[in-house]
Image (cartoon, rainbow, N blue to C red):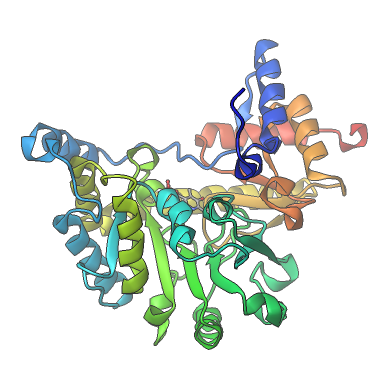
Amino acid sequence: MIKFNKRYKKFSQPFLFEELYRLERAQRKLGKDVISMAVGDPDIPTNPSIVEFAKRELDNSINHKYPNTKGNENLRKEISAWHKRRHNVDFDFEKEISILIGSKEGIAHLPLFLIEKGDYAIIPSPTYPTYRTGVWLSDGLIYDIPLLEENDFLPDFYKIPQKVVDKTKVLFLNYPNNPTGASADLNFWKDLVRWALKNDILIAQDCAYCEIYFDAPTHSIFEINGAKKIAVEFYSSSKTYCMAGWRAGWIVGNSKVVCALNQVKENIDSGQFNAIQNSVAFALKNHELITPPVRQKFKERAQYYYENLKKLSWRPYMPKGSCFIWAKPPIKTKSERAARFILENSSILLAPGIGFGKYGEGYLRFSLTVEDRLIEESINRLKYLDWSKI
Ligand SMILES: *Cc1c(COP(=O)(O)O)cnc(C)c1O
């Protein structure tokens, strides 16, 4: 019999959503049309101008060869120009930018060259689960830092015990945040940079939703002096340009870290298809035309959902960005129980908060990545949900 190693156990723990997916299939078998609001996969198609551009790129046989792992020069230069326009920050396209096969890929590989067995990674709770992947693969330890509603879902890094801080190599963060919808301001980044410089800890900020903001534009950590010494940011075309299936993202920041990640990846993959990379460069070039309608759509949905959930006695957090609503149901109950109750009685599939870590307990996450018609329909269904029956 083939025996797997201990590490594999961490990846094979029963996945919380599995039971819910089983229930979803059972509902569909009964002929119920389930509204699936559990995953954040934009319903909005990629802008047609990007698709048209990509078709022409597909015909160009130069693109049929191996790409290079770091990414093609055209895209890295376009990224550099975009950061200059957007945040007034200069990045050297040779040393401070590297292309990823989706940001998830880079996030998962980052700890492989940072963590020795027994070192810590600090990861928020609730969290996007991929921050754990590379830590597990490196036999590192995870310190959960709570994101609490009373602190606007920002971590209090001064509360981390010094003996953990001393053994920490990397802190993962994600603002605007999945799953809470919270955002971070410039003062937060300033404090964090000071703390990270003092403690020699790499900040890995996940910018997946940095362009899906609802009030003032989000700030980059690199607007703070000294940040390049201790930080990297991960960007993704998945939400910003509704290109989730295209698999493209990038890392910017500390050149030593960017180059090391590239070095590791050269031993793993051979980069993303050049036709896709050039299409992302096209999207970046036209960013100011392509993104506002996407941002506006998610903002309208978030406001509609927030207001209607409140009318139904839910306790939602008004997101400052992202495509999620993080909310407590009208009665206090375990999130998994609430998700099951809603699925069975209203045929809406939601993500239970506990699936994002123990500090997610009590919450449910609505993903606003379904058509407007279904957004409204889901609110109608929740109106008729009788919580006394749970
Ligand atoms: C969707 C998402 C990503 C994007 O991953 P890609 O691999 O770029 O598609 C990264 N981080 C968070 C928190 C996300 O929700």
